[in-house]
Each structure stands twice: as structure tokens, then as C-alpha cells.
Length: 298
Image 1 (cartoon, helix red, strand yellow):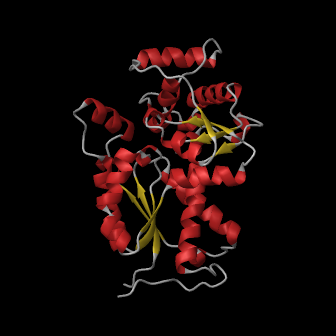
Image 2: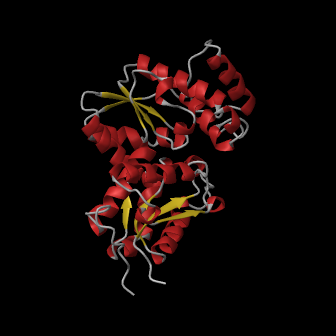
Image 3: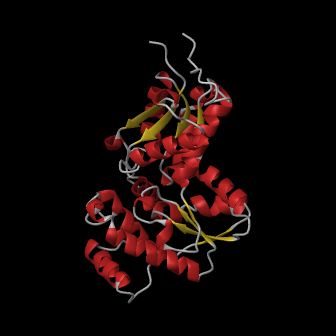
């Protein structure tokens, strides 16, 4: 079978997020004029979650010693598979993966693919460029993220390059026990204490109540939402004029209505648009008016 030129997604680094990215890809295409099933840009999703060590855990153990395999290696293997199936524009929906200690190794591993025309969209860089273009008046930008993204300054450095001042929460450099995080969560919800970066990470990754656990999906992630809303309000009180949801799971719980008047920037939305735009620019600039599907040479 002739292989169509596709968008590839290295998924599994947040399985709850992958379907959301697919939805955003389609929604953006519909806004551009897609009206039939057959108009949709081909997409390949590889969701091999067990292959990827947790990115924050990897970065922490790398610093202390005894780290598991760098997630970059599994991502590179996955990217090669996607490229063999026709992917020529690739996205990785995980912000922490873009830490230099991971992303630069990934780039090195896929250098032969890049020379063959496989383009990887850098989600973090694209998001900060979007903020600079769409929110020029917002000088101070708050960051909600995993602790891996926080400690490695993944968004802070890119925001500075875009002329913005990052605003972050205080962080305690120690590991909170699950029981302590739960007590803090309840105190934050009750308004008795202010959230720390540690609490934001708990709202994302705690195996009992965090978004990644999926335990509260039926309730709309009510407890993570409450912690994230409080964290957003604290960042606003520290001067943030916009807020980047710098973990792809956060938009599953936090919506614009939770923080009225504070613009929320979703990197997953930016990634979806950047993938479609890159595919169109390279392979069919007239899409969807011109419906010819680019095919890889046999």
C-alpha cells in the first residue's frame, strides 16, 4: 500500500492526553475548512506508555544517580517506526520531555531521520513564540507544571528568550509523603494554606488523586482542579498576567472559566496547530481546497 505523508505523535507520555491532542488536531482542521472524513490529514499515534520512564523521575534520578533509561531512547525508537509508516511531521505531547537532558539526546538519536526530512515540532518553543505573538502586553507569565519542568527551567528559559518574565511558585526541595500531600491538598481546598510547586506536581502525578491516575475522571478531576485553581490564583497575586498550562494533563482539569480574567495558554493546543501548519506548509499549502493526498515515493 502506498504510504500517505502523515503527522506522527510519539504518545504514551500521558495516555489521557493523547486523545485530547487528536481532538484538537481535528478541531483546528475543521476551523480551516475540513468538511469530510476524507479531508482529514493522516495521523499516526504510537501510544507505548510502558516504554517511557516518568520524565520528572528520570531527571531527578539522573541528578542523584541510578536513573532508568533515558526516555529519549524509547521516543527515538518510536519515531523511527512512525517515520517508516509515513510520518514526516512529528510531535511529542509531553512538556517535561523537552528538558535538554532528554530532548537533546532524542535529537541526536533521530539525526538521520531529520536528514531524510522528518521534522519534529518543539512544543515548548512553539508555545513561547505563540505567547509572544498573541499576548504581547502580558509581560509576566505564570507557569503551572510538573516539578521536572520547574526545576529544569524548561519554560522559564524559553519565556525569557521570548521577552517575558516567568512567574513561578515557591518549591520545597524535599519529597512529601502521600499522606502529607493529601493533608496539604485538603488545607489548600479549604483556603488554610497557599499552594507550593510540590502541590501542583501532586495534583498532576499523585497515584491516588492526581490527574495522571485517572481516579477522578468521573468527577471532572475535582480535587486536582481545586489545587490548580488555587495555584493559578497565587501566581496571579504574584503578578502573572497570563498562565501557561505547562503540563499536558492540566487542561483536563483546569479551564479558562476557573480563572476568569487570566488568559490560559494550552501548549497542547499550540502543538496541534503547529503540526497541522507544518504539514500544510511542506506538503499541501492549498489544503483543504486542494485535496490531493501527498504520497511517499515508493
